[in-house]
Image (cartoon, rainbow over all chains, first blue to last red; front, side, top):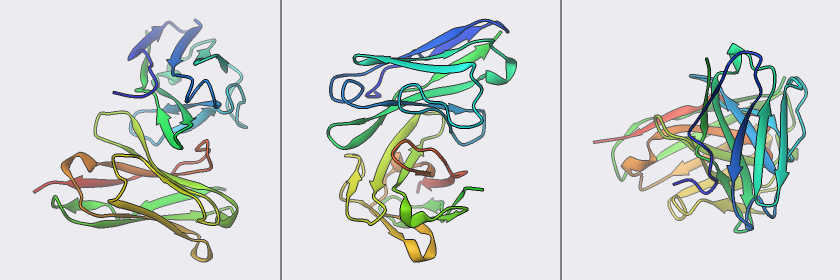
Length: 109
Length: 115
């Protein structure tokens, strides 16, 4: 049971916009920033969004993040086949522990 | 280019010990906090431990506290994870990751705990 709650799966067709939600509590998302990671099959995770809505250099602007209260969302616009991956949200908890969501498997139909 | 390379994984019996290493290159390790994150086969990511650049502050997940010890040698550009009293549920790929928001990850090293 993960501390942060994500839907186990999401899907969309090429060109579509999809969103992935991440729900936490006042002790984690409500108190700290949220980061998102993309994990392609058989590879290490890669930072996609940090500090709720900041994109590292090299991440396409098709990817965007937002946070409101104790929830956060990752949006992917102009969906492409190469976006098929697992996506994880993460935050720090006030108990001084890192917490992750259970991951969302994105399928491009 | 920032690179993190983990090593030291392998097969170990329950109750045994293992020491993981993470070699950093392309940046000055002494300037950054570091973490260990693990992923059990077919499962999601689990944060394991955090250490500040000076080693002054260290945090652990409840699941490993008292059994695992994180450390670093900035002079050798290396991060370590000493794992004792290993259990079946510690079986996972272990990643080292930089900074509080894990901006760079290594490729991981597999630890299998089994008799």
